[in-house]
Image (cartoon, rainbow, N blue to C red; front, side):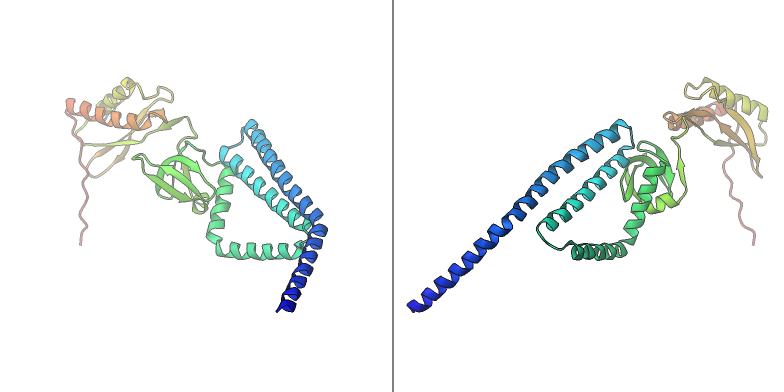
Length: 277
């Protein structure tokens, strides 16, 4: 029993000596690798801050600045990690091959997300709209609250939040109501054929000229848009700023209705013709 214990002690001592020798021989590589890691992380942090300050100074789009800063950060971290394991003596060629295969597998499984990513890049680079713009796309409309890499966040007029994937958003039709400073409304009234058209137009023009939110330049117009089977269709086309557009439309419709009532002008209700068999 004592011989076995001595053998175990002797064997353990050999292992300990070998481990100590390996540790002494390997310690320079380990120390230098750790120094590269910690110094690299510090330098990466400084470079990321410097890049962010430069982009802010150049007044780049906030979403694009944030994306470029994050992309630079992760690219430098990957390079640092490869340098770290290379300094430890680990073969990096196999690691790069595994990383490439993993990237290919992830790309194939996330084709939809990659499409949204590409769409987000196109939106950020070509800027069909910016944060704060009011747009209509994919049968929804709202104010752009945030442009993310994969989705765009819209806030509707009734304070609902809509997330639109950037892939279909970048490939579809986008109506941006905020690019121009002013916006024209196209309001329609159907009036009776017994009405004097000139009188009706003068009444509407008086309403438009007296309204403070209707712009004088470009001037508003009132035209006969269509002669239907049951009514004369007047098109009222006033201009306003984007901020006043909604209130202006509501006010003009209300005041025109009151003015027509005072002048005893009959507003013709919409009549849907029945289909003949």
